[in-house]
Length: 335
Image 1: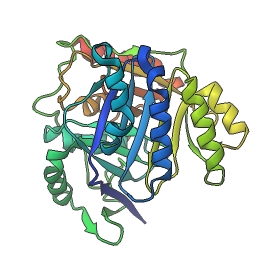
Image 2 (image 1 turned 45 degrees about the horizontal axis):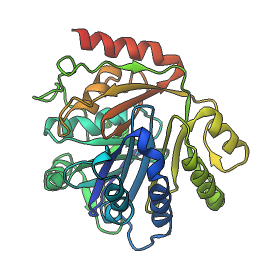
Image 3 (image 1 turned 90 degrees about the vertical axis):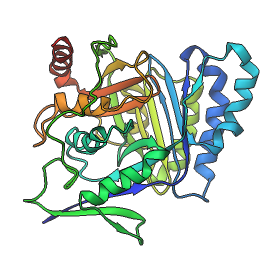
Image 4 (image 1 turned 135 degrees about the vertical axis):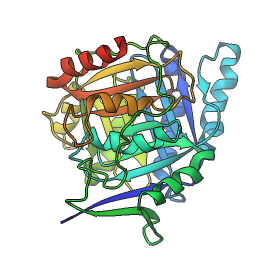
């Protein structure tokens, strides 16, 4: 029995936009137009478009070519009152398809080599895949890292593929990208930056996907949600992949009952938020640090997903594991 992990590096430059929540409504039509463009654009197979809304902030990740077209007019309109921020530089996306049953350990396996190379990243868990955003200038380093870990490039699939027998796998769902044994040299100093993990037990979230035969209904529902968004919402549209949607449970249940979404209606996730506002935007190792506290390299520990936004990180754990995850992260921060 073999385990396969596909890693695809997108060449298209992407940008990351922070939107202050009290100005989010001003960007509603820009986001809807972005959604329409991403849905209808068949020219590129390397686009990733995500919108994440949380109580702390909202973040848009999209191909850079869409920023000027859809968001610059709002920047110009707001002028000095604009509190939204486009992060410096451009990013490339990495799509990782592996063992979806190894939540948490896959986060650890993916992020540890990048942290060890001091590459700052944004990490997004979706229904079918995990996505990593890294600075464009680090692409050659990431490519060499994959090759050094035994990944082979296959032109037919335009992706790197690792194949390992079951007894060779690390058990992390990503056979050759094994977690490093020690933290990166410049591990994030959460004490210094007063980053306190904040558990939000009142928010219950489901990770779902659009049904392939109900895509038009899905997009219409998504546009309606954007006009009056719930407290937590994160959708991801990627070329050649079915859209993913992370959503407040009550709203998700309604769409599940209408057969617009697919997913387990009883696998509730609860968010733990890390406010990274006062940390440098280019700091590396944050996602790895979180995963290494909750998950062991053998896959044991607390299952977790992760959502990076421009100024925060959201750790998502099963509702039954919330207290243990919060206690673990807070205890490590006090040490």
